[in-house]
Image (tube, rainbow, N blue to C red; front, side):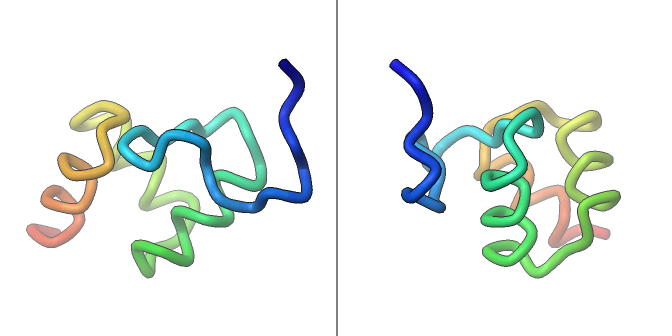
Length: 59
């Protein structure tokens, strides 16, 4: 099934998909961080949103 680009939030709000621009925009706004910081967090702890939130809080 193709992505519905009118739905600006990610389908699975437990995982962060850096391959979809609308998801990157959602997560940077949701987490209050830059795209670079989001990528660093995902590289460090994986795609699970709770793990990324925890990592960002420690930075």
